[in-house]
Image 1 (tube, helix red, strand yellow):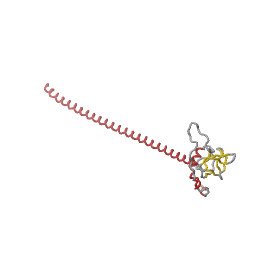
Image 2 (cartoon, rainbow, N blue to C red; image 1 turned 30 degrees about the vertical axis):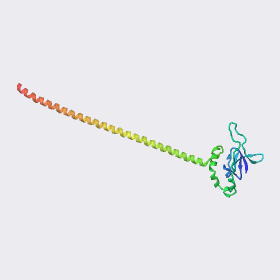
Image 3 (cartoon, helix red, strand yellow; image 1 turned 120 degrees about the vertical axis):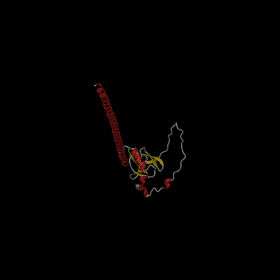
Image 4 (cartoon, rainbow, N blue to C red; image 1 turned 90 degrees about the horizontal axis):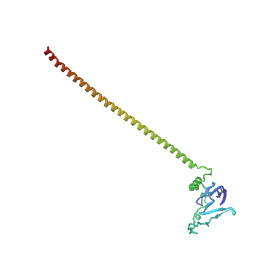
Length: 206
């Protein structure tokens, strides 16, 4: 496995491909896929040594004094690579890229200055923008309908109130008019009786 120098350091390079995050699969080469110079090869940590032009195994040699860290842990031998068909034609196809699609997306998201836009992210943003726009329009329509319904209800309430007041006033005026007519009739009858009583008195005086 050769190495190619990029602005993020040396990265694994083999026929325009690089090693995947799992340490076994191959990915199309892109800058800053390995951005810290530390590479996972067959489940172990390696870094590129420029003098000898080879990948060398990285062993931790420094521990913090404030932590009681173990100098060495019991390691389990990983024999998974012995049972994989590393030379099978499947590793040369694009189907393997789908297995590590999440790692590729995470790397492209973290490395924001590569200048390579994410089509999937753009489509997701566009769909979210359309959904957000439709959500705002829907909320606006609901608010408008609610305001119109409230105004119509208020107008109907005012109309009913005015009609009720008009009918009540009309009934009062009718009752007042009937009372005036009764009072007029009573005055007329009283006047006639007084005139009848006054005639006999005048005749007796004569």
